[in-house]
Length: 99
Image 1 (tube, one colour):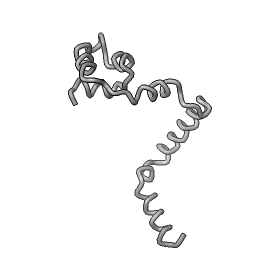
Image 2 (cartoon, one colour; image 1 turned 90 degrees about the vertical axis):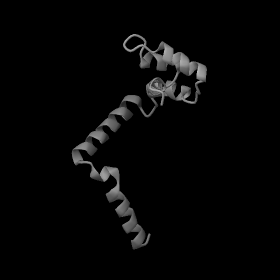
Image 3 (tube, one colour; image 1 turned 180 degrees about the vertical axis):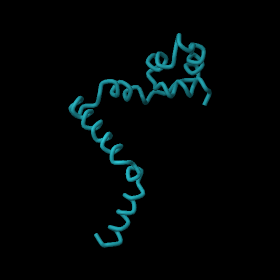
Image 4 (cartoon, helix red, strand yellow; image 1 turned 120 degrees about the vertical axis):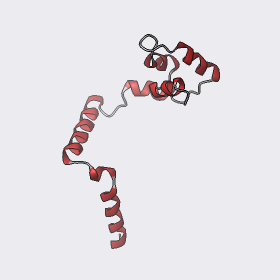
């Protein structure tokens, strides 16, 4: 690499999001990463597998309207609907708030 390329790479690193984090924050990220690797031995957690399998689903207009009718805070909530329809809780929130 020539010196210009090296300087450009250094500039990218200095301007990156992680360069603005404190050492304590970076250390906590590293600890969490190691805990995750140790706990799951490099295998994706089951909850993520289930979520990722259902992620490709598209909801029809009928199902969207059904979700809006069924939603009742603290009784028939977002998490319950998300599990029932195989989508994320965030998507249920967007559907309910008509985004």
